[in-house]
Image (cartoon, rainbow, N blue to C red; front, side, top):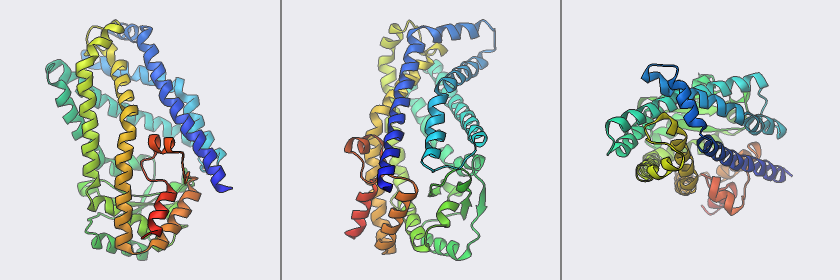
Length: 364
């Protein structure tokens, strides 16, 4: 019964995800094809704003426009669906506040990235694609370091883990696996969701373990240890560096393609220069399509790394039974599809499905 419910949940979730992607592609295409982007850019130019305000105003307006058009889908996917399957207890007002905070963060990050993009494009028209790629990659590293101390606290409350026995066990595991961490923290997941999670986040001086309170309450010490052994294995095996290299290659490839082909599409949509703010939806269209095309490849690489992390975690802890019981609990609590259709796995899964991970532990 639980797995039937998980299949139903997953089917709805992935259908909505696919719908959302193609809806975004449709909106961007219509915004360009109907000349709305040019009209908006011309309307902003008539306001005689300082040059440095044109992009922020344009970006803000199209973000608000998209947010309003996409709101019904977003509300159903991230609020109604989660409540329908008893995975969330968040109030509508709290959900809306989180959406506004998330939108503001997305806007600020986008403004930084696109502002950099336009500045370099105008000042280095021949090699801009390479310079922009390198700066975007560098910014992603900075964001990785800031996320634990700036972004996560905007949505969840941190507190140091008060279970000294569990904390000592985690610190000993980290030492055994030669992983340096700042501390172990607990976050109040239960205020928003009934799902469970744990992570090893940050880079450099911000590396830390975070445990969801929904995890700490329902899992044994051995099960929590194997979860964190998996997270520490990513660090030991330098998976973050490998993923950064894969993502960096995707970014460079995307901008190189924009550099060589954008002229053709600018003509189709009646635009003259890529540096014109009216061409911003075209850049977004490129990035969404590349994300759609390269996503399955990146997921495949991620699944390989996750499998290797499972193997090292099992080797370091020698607790396959705890691993299996933990995966059973997580899949039930999170309504995970344990054996998805191969196409769904190919398109969406950045971790091996639960049944595959359990079979790996059974052979250990």
